[in-house]
Length: 115
Image (cartoon, rainbow, N blue to C red):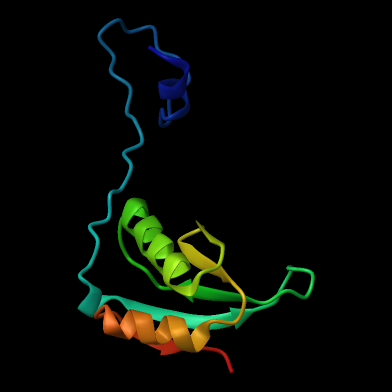
């Protein structure tokens, strides 16, 4: 058994039973909702970023790969950098209006949030 599998074990440290099977943590693979069912929030964020503005997109429900794909598309259409982490998309700069228009054009339910 590889070391990575040991970290995923639940409730057991060691067993002397040779027929014992460990319970492993199952990754929940959330199916990605279609764009018309996504409820995305687009907001401007400056917290803990040394005064720099970022556009924050939250509320995506689905697989990490689909979120990264959406983030990549938004970064390309805005022509700026950004990242995807903690189930959020961060786009450098204040692009709330442009991102909102892009998301609505792609069929997502999106709203401006926070002032």
